[in-house]
Image (cartoon, rainbow over all chains, first blue to last red; front, side, top):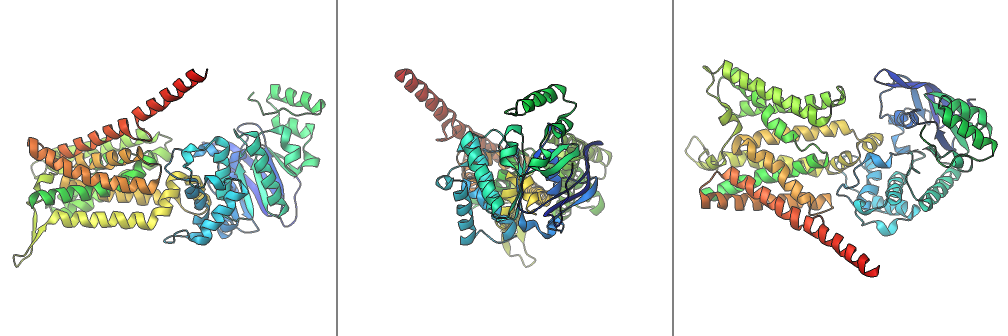
Length: 264
Length: 298
């Protein structure tokens, strides 16, 4: 079930992406309304990260196009922010928390200009939103996993964008950080910002997100959580992975979901 | 005066190479400098064959072009060929170097050139190659002008591109997402490394260039957790290495480049053992202290 909306903030049209001739995403067609808090779910290798990387222009597209705010990415880059997977960078890099969060301002600054007072203030505000002000001078090599994730989120917040893409922000973080992050994302969504999250934990989907994208190379479903997050579509999404399928089915019958997506 | 010229030349090479080397080791591309310094051999030979003389500008141009080509080839094999970056570095520079060796042996009769004079420029000759104007005015060693220009170029490059180099080195995907091209800055950095390596090794020799690209930044990396401080420490180390290296060579009557590289290695070893934050001894001590405090509380 794929629900399309009028005046979407994000439109993905007929998107196909492949690595080495093997399609990772096939014919994805979806639209997302403004202010949604969206969860992208699907089994490992379903193309969840690839979907947001293609929207961010990090991967060459096989076919199709994506539009943000009815324009191409290059025209609205200042309104778009991205939080890569925490494991994608070297945390032993010689940088402080302040250095990393200020990177969120680089796109607006352009070449030749150094961060000014306003940029430092924006960085501090962003750190405040993730309760990390006290760590501003800390070296990033000394942070815990949860703190690293908060710093990455703060860097995206410092961009003061209108749409945010987060790649597995809850992977390997402590419960307190997960709670803090989801509270913040809800608040952002209430303020009319659109937040799109690659997510792994089926149990929390219903409480966290008001819109769900279910992906397994093809788009299985995209719509309000209450309408699409059901047993039939979950089976279709996770289909083929039989053990997981029956597990999900059993748990659904019991009215509860597995705590973490388990590898087949 | 001569010793001062040599120390200044050594320091300028050390600072230029070291500053760029900081970015190379943080990008895990430390061996690119080594690759470039060998791969440029065919460029030098071809430039010589085309121009017919050993004018250093022609040589520099030929070497520089091949240097940039080397970095393109490494990146191409890595990206499109799905080859690991160290493997693509290894394949690229060995065959380009071999091509240079073949070119030299084929044209041996016509070429007043051998690997030694191409690869092992000699820093001791710095005071001998003077820039003398037509009217006989002596402007001092020519190399110092070349190296000052290289140093100035590197300083301007890093000052202008500091933010972009910092971000694209730390997190290229995020850089691309906010509209700063990681590929563009990769090639700009590699172009700068190529140009610096070629200009520097013509005057001071390839071995010293390779040593100074990696050893001082690696030493600085163990001393600080701040990129700006790492760059400054690297520059300071460059001057120390050049000064001590010269006097070591003078006192035991040995190769200056060899002595400077040795000092660089010794400094690294010292820091590796005794660095207050990352040193082996400090780490072992902390671990033992924690272990013994646990033993007493248990």
